[in-house]
Image 1 (cartoon, one colour):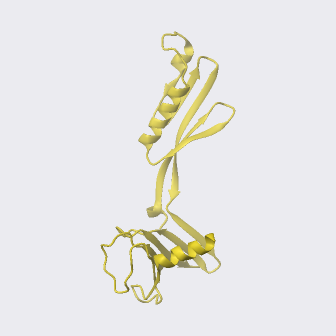
Image 2: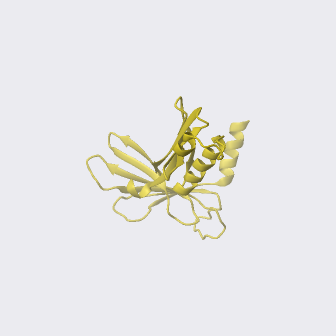
Image 3: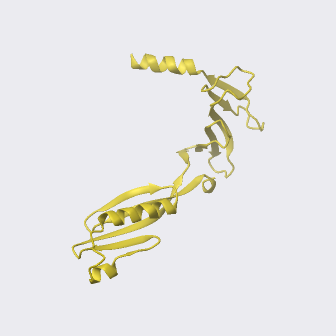
Length: 180
């Protein structure tokens, strides 16, 4: 479960020897490297005409960089690949509840799974969906932007047995009441 719902991001860090800062978090290595290069160039006050050791010691590599700035300051960068889970997991005494982004095209939502304590298999529990377009058919007159909750009321059936709809206009009314 976790392996398929984890994405790798690239975190760019910089230190000046006194503090460590995050330059940014990026969806891929190339964007991270571009940001590291831009930050390197922004801080680099060296004159390429100077013939000094710190120019030769400064370097930019694929996952790191070091800058000896005019022999006064030293900066070091690292690009660190970090796993970011695309799911939420809640441990309970009876098992684990997991929620992750639904893979249904055009209908963003959340899948909820339950893994009972002492078992490896996950049980489908529910799917929460918001329909985004008018291009769907429904027997319950759902409208775009209604929240639809499909629940597996019977774990022995391989399909949803329960359906709940939270109407968009009810959501708007509830939000208006809370604001008053």
